[in-house]
Length: 115
Length: 114
Image 1 (tube, rainbow over the protein chains, first blue to last red):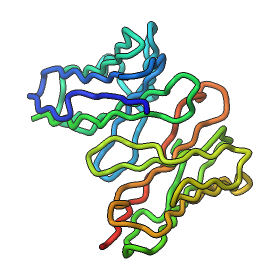
Image 2 (image 1 turned 60 degrees about the vertical axis):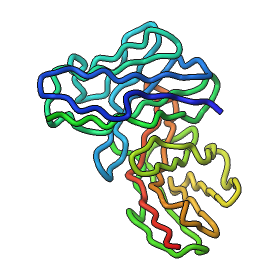
Image 3 (image 1 turned 30 degrees about the vertical axis):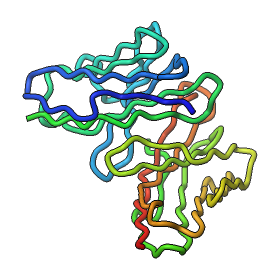
Image 4 (image 1 turned 90 degrees about the vertical axis):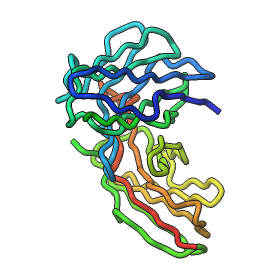
């Protein structure tokens, strides 16, 4: 089955630094990837849609200059949290849709802790 | 706007019992999907039901969809301790700028006691 690999699984960083999270589709090409944020015991909140070769589409209320998304190839999208603050601490999950598929394949998420 | 309200928020049952979770949504959909999430992990796709389908089965899972009531249910039969997880419904909206984006419900936390 389609596999999405997300790294790192956990990261701790200091306030003011930037953190990059990678999302790779291992055995399929993904023209579109999605980035979600999840708070404890809550649902997934869509942050942005990452489109290969073009700019990401951000959801309302998500700062595009803070959450930089790059989708440089058909198998890799990255999310960079810039100038991280403690309130950015959260669980970030990426997903990708296989061409022609209707369901999403998810990475295992990244637990970000900003101290 | 939040699409996909689920109930119950939490469900605790004994092994062997059936678990039923419900999901309601607000807008027209192409399909509705159910996902499972183990604690601290990503989501795993369980089953998809299209808007023109009323019921679908997959192993111990049974999903129903009532588009007139904008609701769906997920039934897990003969539950096992390994079914303990959070379950989310997700709607795939119909057309427009929402096409291809899934909107997730609040989820149901299922605990199955051995």
